[in-house]
Image 1 (cartoon, rainbow, N blue to C red):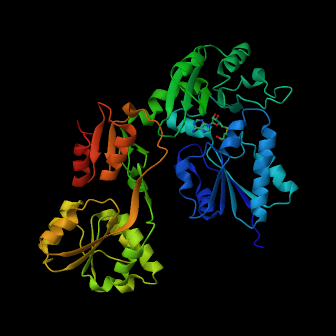
Image 2: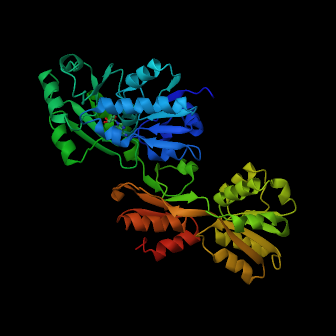
Image 3: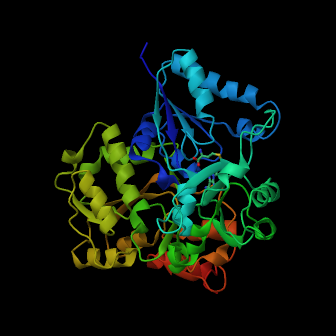
Length: 467
Ligand code: SAH
């Protein structure tokens, strides 16, 4: 049997972008992904097709109740069982595996069973809270030490291991898992001599789309955190550095944009960027019709790609049938815009036509300039795309064959959002507009809407998002 091992990988907190390159490599290759309930779900899309995804959710939640040792054993046994089956196993842990995450218990179990392992560090929640709240954890002028403390010790332990008296002398104190016990902890810090006016920043869901940040003083943090709905998972940064929050809080200083499309690389904007894909692409259940067109692809004069995803599925199917780009020789290729054009290059195809105005109207304008009458056009598209382009091309005499290459479905499990916090929402397709309408109903009063493409704009008008 193949020799495999367990990879204990830090996923970083919440936001999927915070995993390391090494961690992502492993995740993409793993056969079995055993993940913590706090791991950002967007990250799981990176697992390979057919990988077994196992959430420790129920086990995770029980951690706060009795008998978690039994549950922890279950996780360790699962790791060992899967690796013995010859599977590549990733144990994906929230934040950094070595901090407050039972890393030692899992490693002990692996060592005992003589199972090989590798540990990949991750961004811990304290670092994320620091970055996303604009509070450096140390500052050589005012704070030269920082301690990380858990606010929730093993309830089965007879005696606390935390010496609040000693650790209160550190200039920065970071509390993990402290929401439930906050008043008690604050009391202990007072007793140990921390002044009531020590600045505190609380950050819940750091790095996530629904992050909340609250500033207070040690004297009133418990009350304010409750009032402002600071819920777990949250980090509390206590000490003089917490005073920095205003100047360095780049999330607050910038315009906040919510991007609802799929492409990940649109983040290079001036604003603070939040990515919430409102749609998901899935393969069709039946490719018979689409594949039949591909088998006769040589009969077409043009293939017109109206999205990069159309290009991806087109080539996936083409390769599946045993063809490749050489079978497209002599066929002209059009791309709706630059990202489709770039994606085509990945498949070794240079588009013959890309309109300057990146929209179906722009594409139609360009296609009509060439003598398209009588030409056979293949239009791979999603199952719900707008039919306008095909119809317009038919009207000017082209012979259009439009065929679904993939399904576009609304994303599930979309989080509750405080929509007021966004200055701008960017919609990339009519389907993102519809999905938004269904889940969130209305855009907040002062939020601007930006639509990419005229068809998207039309849908936003129709759904009355612009009212
Ligand atoms: N190993 C993790 C900590 C796991 S303990 C790490 O290195 O970060 C779980 C605690 O981590 C939570 O109760 C909370 O205090 C903190 N935490 C995890 N994700 C967080 C997030 N996105 N925002 C704020 N705190 C978070």
